[in-house]
Length: 430
Figure 1 (cartoon, helix red, strand yellow):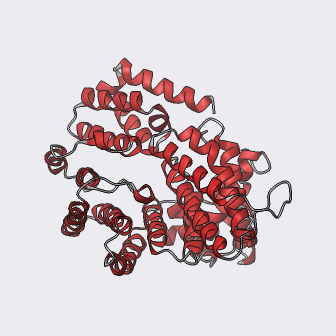
Figure 2: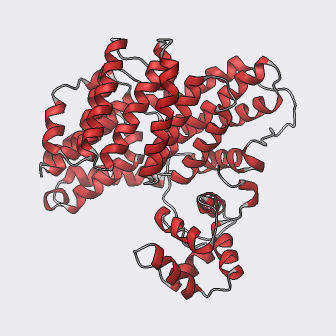
């Protein structure tokens, strides 16, 4: 489990206090980190961390934790608090890239809900003990996820803080059977938060949202919701580059869900199948090709059991999503020839917009790897026309555009320059 967020300060303060407690100079701490983590860290880097002007990347945070004797992931929470302080003007003057329109205040409110006393001490501004209507709260959560799946990220970020806050309030005040339902909603609000935060590159806060949601799901008395939160945690661990931990969690969750599968419910099958898809991406990034094939074959078996594409608990699981993941895992494994073969089996028009656009990112990556720059740019423009917010703000889209800009033909293509300008304008307006 995470250390209690209430006991953890800003990243700058935690690093400085840990170094002082060990009576190390900044150069000494830098040398200790370099022994653990190969990329060079200097005394000047430590000084920047301690001034709040820079936050270490997640690999360096792991090494800093070892060097300072801190519990694992302590610095992820501290980094999230530092970013919140920087954005509100109460921390350093570090400049971070804007996200969606209205997102700084939305992200600040989400942070407040997940990082205050123990993560679940939310109280609304009116100080009322009257919990929100659970039916209204469930409808609001569903609207948030519909906005996500239709690539309306701005709307999701605008609505999400109120849903998270309402779910915290309901879980704190509901009793009896309503308490169980409130905690289920709270767990799913953590999953919703983690899903969009990962896409926006807010990996630290996404980890915290997943972990907090999973903690509540363990007490929510619903195997499907628990499995769904564990799947969310698998994705979040992947985004942190923690392949081994992601693999172990996926395996443990799969074992737990196989028991639930005996009931034959589409809901449980969808959660289990989507977990297999998440595990296949982890295996692909680890270079375990045979494991990828086994996981996808099992997922395809369960998709055929369903016989159609479903969307239980927003999984979008079915034959189409399995076909899309065959492409995605091949791209992740750098098997471009295999990815091209799998493209023939995909009819992405049946998917929710968010999944369809993510698939188009893989199509663009395939074209990029084949040096078909014109085709890659055309694919990104198609994706932008369908879902501009997702293209302008998704981390993978930004990486693809950056790769295209580095190519000779990409630098000379006015369409890419225009896409880049639209993306920058979207950030500037935030």
